[in-house]
Length: 135
Image (cartoon, rainbow, N blue to C red; front, side, top):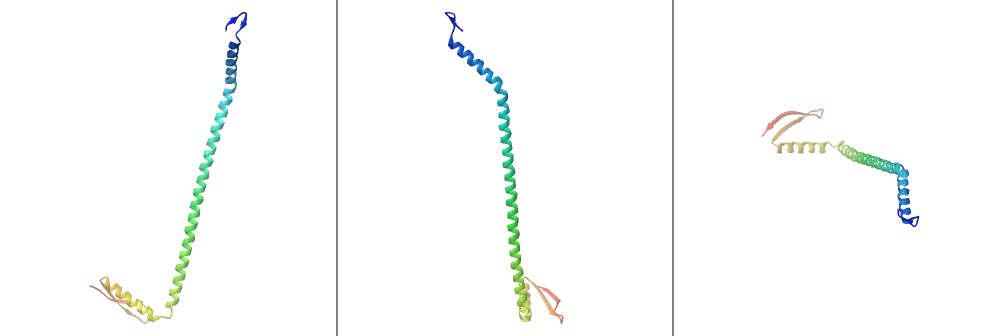
């Protein structure tokens, strides 16, 4: 500080006053800034945890929906198979000639593989294997 004519330089007073004020602000506000900064970090961590939880919930819901859709598709497929079996079963009732045709074509298909099996039908309708030949 320069003293001219018994007065203190006003610019020096402003600089010193600013430094003192800045020091007081840092001294008072420093701890509060740290608390504020930690609060922001905590909020950010909480938001990240919430987002991670939401992602996990959505993934689990997608798996559940997928499993439900697969189960529904399997039920639809099984219903179709059951209906087809019912239609085939109804068409084979009292249709002995067609069953004999299927029996004969089955024997022919087996002989194409190199094996010949001859069945002799019995009165009960159950064929009994009598002879098996290998070509």
